[in-house]
Image (cartoon, rainbow, N blue to C red; front, side):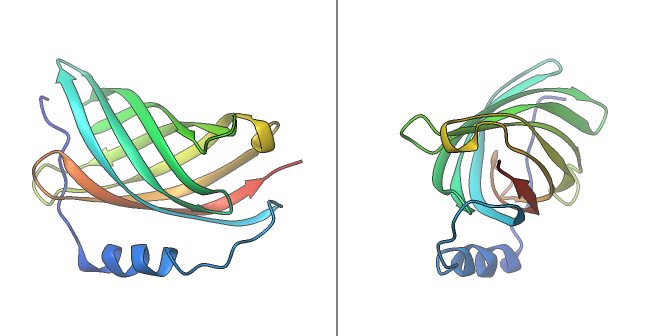
Length: 147
């Protein structure tokens, strides 16, 4: 498997735009929504790496990096998001994808956090729509618990 690509779906554009108008909220237990973009920057054999950027509510703007291993049509790995100022979230993910329709779905689980995310836990459902060129748009919805 040499490529990790997906197709765009217009609803993600709407969700991304909606993400830009979500009200800022104090970090607390509850709903967690993310919209963003990503790009696969490296694939070789069963390994892949990439970058991401987006808006998390709560949390704000972030940039991220991920690395994972492919097994069939599943990729699992770790993604770290940097919100600046020493505030990070690190996730374990497992995603199933299709080279035919360029859509992937899966789950993310918080495994670490620093700064205002220290001690955080939570999980989120993930949907990604690729563009067919290694780039795509994604949405996560779930729960984030911050002590």
